[in-house]
Image (cartoon, rainbow, N blue to C red; front, side):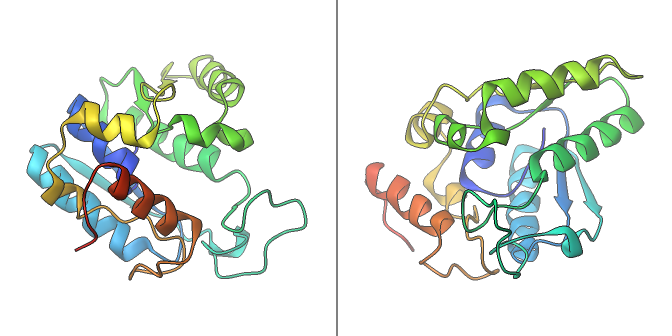
Length: 195
């Protein structure tokens, strides 16, 4: 499972209990906090966590990279081909570790506004990966659920959900970006408060 340290992937990991988790530091600004959250969650679940560091920051755009957004950016944090990159890296880790048939990602219904959050993207990338050596595909079991529905369905304890990190800007929540706003909205909908 591709584990970002964010709320959606944390809830999905708690729900599905994957055999292996992969965290990728690709040069994103909040990488330290995301990795810390991923390590905590994997430890609580008792699953191995592979951490991969590949500095792609020069390719980034917007808030996640700390650069001006590219002209075609649909959102302020958009990073070109980010999900494709991360899923491909997780696929490479899966092949090295062996015995993995699919990469699980934490896409939720709200992600469909972006091209790389759509069902068409997931299907195309899964097909491309399956025709290559290893035949590793792609699954998004929560794609039909909202983040609130996923957290509820997962049963993740609030104390562990509190470790998740959704800020697009830094290792400390800025409380202004779309990631922080979504995080706070989900906590509010769940009747939880920010620590």
